Figure 1 (tube, rainbow, N blue to C red):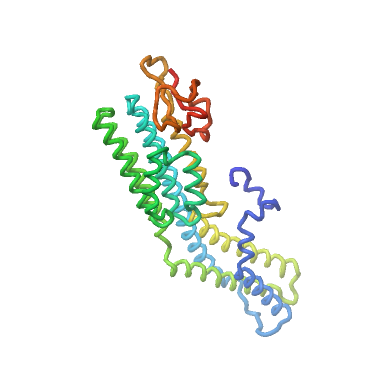
Figure 2: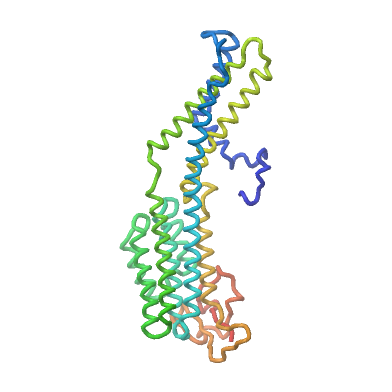
Length: 379
């Protein structure tokens, strides 16, 4: 939204439903401020009640400074929290892709292809599982299962049955970290087994472990943010102080409409000042509350599904890339494919004679099914 529209399009009517204005108008405190201004202006114009001859317009200046400080501190914290959570979410994607790239170039034996694909599945299952328990907006039905079906993240045959049985023992919506820990441990075990049989060296083993552990660390920090909320006494202080300030400001601005004042400078311009101040203060409070929790359904929240799908597709592309390097040709490398029908890897697909390269398919088409196509590396 922000990338497609300029801030100068603030008055575009079609964009108003996506702004903070409808949320402010929906709040009763906004109308209390307007009522306070209209009441004060009416009393001042009709000289009803108290006499405000000694009214000093500068009596509210000290409150401006205090409220400004409170708003800046609150919104700054909320935005810092927002950017920090995005950094963690982005780093998870990069760590998964980096781990798959390292594994693709470290598992030197062509027989390691099943383990390579299993590592890719485990890492992306960790990614999908993490968001199921992080927020109520993403659950098994609307998030996890569609991703599993689209990218075949649970594998095929016996692997799929066994992993289904394991996941049936936990409620991903409430116990996601348990399942996340399983797949993290299994991913580390794959890397350990590859080192034991001599396919990867100790430095690469350590680097792969670091990338996998980094995924776990970032996910746990996101969960920590979900439990680290601002104390209610602080948020109540900020909101109550802002509301009282706006009510007082509106009442004092209404006193400008004395019997001899013009409608322009006595009524309309002070009203514009009240409306702008209300929009700025309540708007910033609403923005801070929105960005504090970016894993919801608001338009401003993170595109979690896009992040997970992009990560799954890019990491899948990484493990399917050819061994060929510029200027070097490996004559001994044989193409391999994974067959859903026979649940095995082979040098040539048993169901079709044609071999497809990774570059000829889009990321969403990777299904590893011999009946439709298979993934192979170019020689």
